[in-house]
Length: 314
Image (cartoon, rainbow, N blue to C red; front, side, top):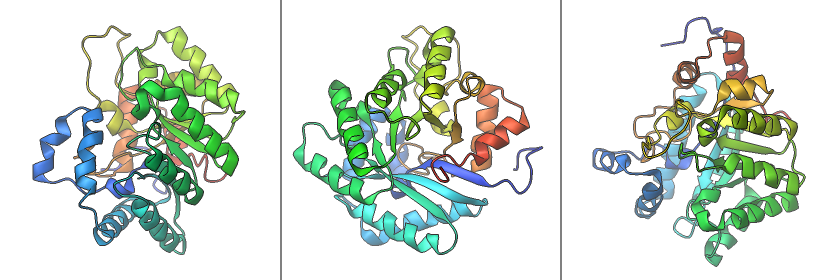
C-alpha cells in the first residue's frame, strides 16, 4: 500500500542492496536466519558454494525488476567477493548492469568483502581485482574486527589510488560500545576523502548520548559524508539487553542527522535472503518504516530522502 500524501510520481533512489544474495531464502534457511549477523557471515560460505552463473543471473535480474517496477531507476548494490565465489558475483552483476543501462536504469556496484581482507592474501588479491571493476570501493571493517583500522586503510588507499568513492557498513550492532561512524570520519580526514565517502547504517550512533550524536552528525556534515539508512535491516537487529543506552529505536538518529544537514539516502539492504528473509524490496514500506521509527512525518523531508540521488549525479 502506498504511503498517504507522497506524490504519485516519486522518483525513488535505492542506495543499498545485495542483489547477488537476493532471493535465496527457503524454508530450510528460515531457522538459520534467526542467528546473529556475524554467524550468518560464515553460513553464507556454504550457501555460496552452490551458486551457479545461471541461478545468480536469474536472481539478480528478478530483484532488479522488482525495484525498477516501483519507478526506481537508480540502484546501488554491494557484491560479494571472496575465495569461494571469486569474481563470479561481480562479473554477473556487471553484465546485468550493462543490460539494464540500455533500458534507462543506472546500477552502481560496490565490493562486499564478506570474508574480510586482512590476513588472507587470496581475499585481498580478489578485493584488489574487484575494485578495479566496480564503481565503488565497498568495505566491511567489522568483519576484520581486530584489524578494523587496517581494513579501512586498505579500503581508503585502494579508493584513492583508483579515484573511486568509498562506502562502509558501520555501526550495525545497535550497541553503545560501537563507534565506527566516528572512526570512519577520522579516516575520511586522514585520506582527505571529503565528499567521496558514505556510511551505511550507523545504527549504533543512536546508542550514544544525545550530545555525542549531535557532535558526530556535525562532523558528518562538515566532511560531506552521506549516510544511507536501510530501515528494515536496522529495526531487525538483535536487541542487546545487557547494555545501557538512551532509549531509541534500532535505526540511525535520522532527525539529528537531518537537523545537522547530513545527506541521508534510503536503502533496502538484503532482500529475501539469509540476513533479511522477509524483506521484499518494497521502497514505500522502507520509507514508511523510516518515518515511523524516527517519528518523521514531514512529507517534504521524506520525499527528499526517497529521491536523494547522492553519488549518482554528483
